[in-house]
Image (tube, rainbow, N blue to C red; front, side, top):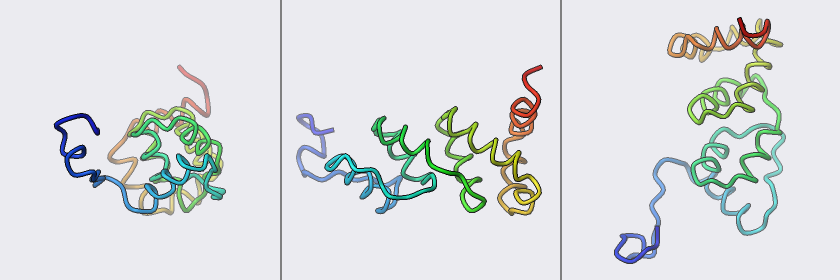
Length: 130
């Protein structure tokens, strides 16, 4: 990124356009202090940033956080996009345990229509592979 001839090297500025300020600030705080954010729940945006920039310790720590009804669909989306098996399993397990509530979420209908494989994944998690 800061090699000779790159824009970043010439301007000393790094443009990060695929994440908001909050996850990048938490990522930088972690890099400088090694302190984990004090959130109890998975932060899907922070996970995506940690995964993209290969901050593995932070990414792995985020995977230990809780999933809730307020973030499960975003967590699942990030898990599928980044092929994050631990996070995907955690989100799928939450969905199985809370299906009646999850089915009422507007994002549930959209998600399982865009990713029909989720139904297969839920079935395999609940009943085992065929």
